[in-house]
Structure formats: C-alpha cells, structure tokens
Image 1 (cartoon, rainbow, N blue to C red):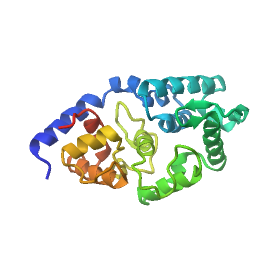
Image 2: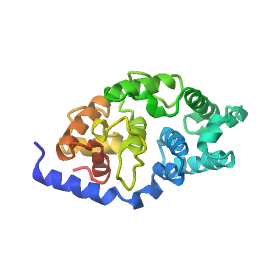
Image 3: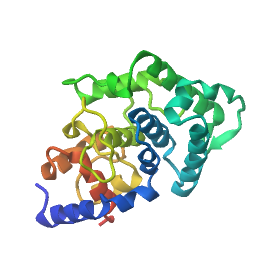
Length: 241
C-alpha cells in the first residue's frame, strides 16, 4: 500500500500540473489549435510521433510542420489530399527522422482514413487496450518511430497520444474518443517518470519498459481507479526522492 505522504505528494503534483498552463510548453498544444475532430486527431498523432529528445527543438519542428499542413487546409486535409507526395528528399527532419519518414507516416494515415473514419476504429469496444495498440502498430509497421507490433518497450509516445484522445474533463487532454475508457489507459513512461516512480517504490523493473508502465499504472490506480493515467501529471511534476 502506498504511504500516505506519497499519495498526498502525488495528488498535489497532479493538481498543480494538470492545468491549462501546461499546454503551451507541451506538444499537446498543437491539436488544441483545432476545432474539427479529424484535425485534432491527425495533429495529435503527428505531434506525439515527434515528441522525443529536446523539447525546445521538436516543438519548433512541429511548428513548422503545422504551418505546412495549415497551408493545405489543416492536418487532416493535408494527409487525405496527398500533399505529402511532394516530399522526395532524404534530408534530416529531426534527429533520427528524415522527411521521407514523415511522408511514410502521412501515407499510412491516409490509407487508414480511406478505410475508416478514425484511428479510434482500430480500438474495439470491450476489448483489451492491448488489442487496439497492436492493431495501431500493425498499421504503421515499418514506419520509423512507431513501435513494432508486440513491442515490450514502454511506447511512451503512443500511450501519450491515447491519453490525449481518451481522457475527458481535463484542461490538457482532449477526450474526443469514446470506445476506450480512461480506466484502460497506461501511464506514459519516459526516463523522468520512470526515475520518479522507481524512487517512490512504484515499480521494481530495472528499465523503463512496458512492464514498468503496467506496474506504475497499477499503483496509480490505487489513487485514481477510474483514471490512472492522471498519474502521468503527478509523476511528471514530482522529483526523484
């Protein structure tokens, strides 16, 4: 059982960091710019895909990509109209990503949107979240930056995207999906969240892998049984003990 002082610390951090002021310094700021559901989802997936490394740098790269997409009528129209077909170069886009990686990501998104209304359709109601994650990874198999199907990594960016799409009533998350419940979500685990969680005894795992995320989520469900991913804000805002 979590110690009372740890529970108090985590609740305080969650209250402090899950606020509208969080948005501007986070990649979630990009999907917040849009009113249409398809634009929100498309922007969110691309923004989550890009969110690694230097926050200052990848936010600048995302700003540039969103300018390009907005010039074409918005992220969804950019993807579905095939504007990405004009990308031909192998130049670096950001760190390990080339422009052709972005093109391939858009190509797969366009293929999905030609067959279904939303990425949400890959998540079947009343089925385990893992089944939908597997479906999603299969659709993007071979795309740089997307976990291979069945990956044992923490898949932080993917679970962050799901947090954005699923959690309702949040000043940060967008909550536009209905087939996945907040209770099903896993806490997105990066190196900071893992370090804090391990220092608080929330995981026994020796690395920030998927099992660590499952363990951490289980501990957060003690505090927020219907919304364990709120623990992401709590751990983000806490310091290593």
